Length: 280
Image (cartoon, rainbow, N blue to C red; front, side, top):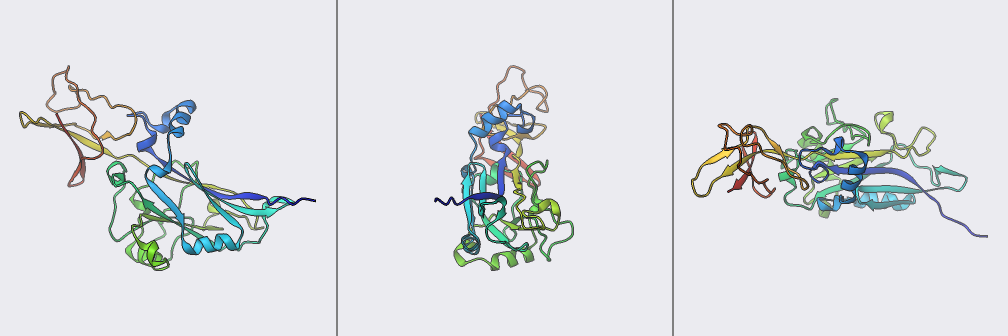
């Protein structure tokens, strides 16, 4: 007689970023399925972020026979299930059980190519439960099919930030970009991970960043003349954005002039506008 230990998917979290997935001015959302697949083959969250369970969550995972498993697009949490029912956890889990994961940025250029504003005293919170210190307008963590991008609305107040960080171990408090906090049953049924019978729903949550768009400022080293585009252009790792010398500048430039795309290394913020500088 042999015994097989079976694990089922409790939930998944998918991270996406349009800087890596868009192709020049062609957005990932507008691509054909085959082109999307090609872009996803080159994509990995390791390029910009590190996600780990907190020390407390790691302990909970062990106690409830759960497994944290990284994927190219984020991570999954599996749980041991009964042999007779693949969606029924082997150990009954309380509906108010909370799991937290640290999100840290490992690319120093992340802020340059990501369309979010940062704050020194606030962190991003992605959760299916609203903290009591947040307003009723609190933005809940999107699901995989939600057409929603991450913005500064996911920044929580300084009070909430302080409360969240106070629960962490000293080593965990360094360089936190955000916290992912998931309770087995959320404030709304759409955010639930288990149903009222304790059985798994296995949702897929999504954290989808947009790529930053900047005004492109071309600086001629010889003449000292500077020209900038009339509108902001997207920054992407793949593809090329064609500049129209006649329509993209005021005054118009010579029609046969070529203009390179900028790198993400040189970005300047003036008032509320972001500029990419290209020396020609």
